[in-house]
Image (cartoon, rainbow, N blue to C red; front, side):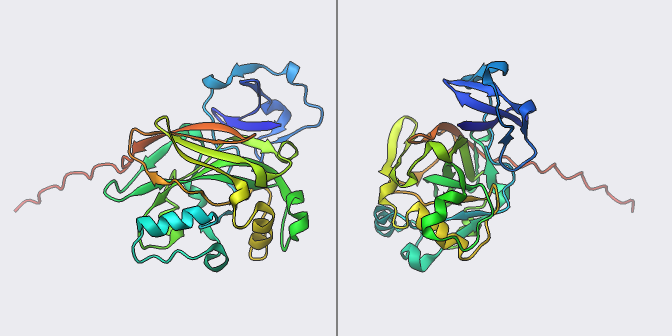
Length: 283
């Protein structure tokens, strides 16, 4: 099943390019939308998928964990391009994982508000695992038993020497969508094709079979440090082909069996109000 959040926090089931509104048959207040047993889509009003605004399928996760360098070819391209001079780029077993601020999470319809235009900022497409139950010290062989489903993710990254969490946690720099594909539809997350197009041009194209730490091993690794709860998410790392974004770009991030999301890049505009004029004091 493909479950989405759309418009004003409605819950939908995606089927045949249509969204069936099941909000009244679910608990939308939970981090992951939970449907009641025996939902009959024939009794739900469908809308064309193109007519809805897709939000993040996961609302307010407690923890976002990410793998920084989990494809060999990506590690090699980062060394060649030297986009973060002075920043060490070790393998994942030495680098470990990192955390992203939950405040950075958005859905496809909200887009990316790019800051610091003078600095290189890259797209990074990733497979994202969503936990469905509490997970701590999970054995690799049982790892997929804790997965609610999978999504496509964008880990937007400002290049520089600062800590990864700092550079990757800017508002709107974690995009999740287009919906949650439940685990029963993804028999092996380590055999999925991922692609990213920028303005119609293919930039990233790989299979998760090339992951250094596969999904099961990543879950084992992450839960040896953290207790993951329902709705928490795990970004599994990006393949080679990363490149800079600019306002006006349109990104299309897709995963085999997971759907595709269109994400627009715009320039960040400050919400700060102008300061009131200072009154002159009488002399």
